[in-house]
Image (cartoon, rainbow, N blue to C red; front, side, top):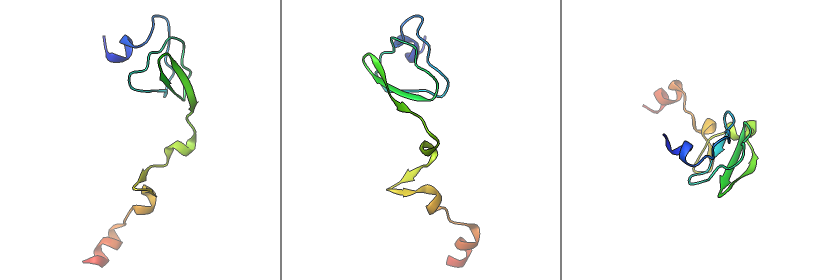
Length: 75
């Protein structure tokens, strides 16, 4: 039995792509594409396409990508 099952009541289901906060106790079904946390777990918000943007030190990672041509210019 894995950790998720231990914190999920019998009969409660976690939907695809749902994120459950660490230590949360799931007592009711959690739909797909949401973030839920707490004891008992409550839905905080939906996961949107905007959540696909990744950041590093406040800047979008896509903005920090360096091409091979740019690297060769630095040499």
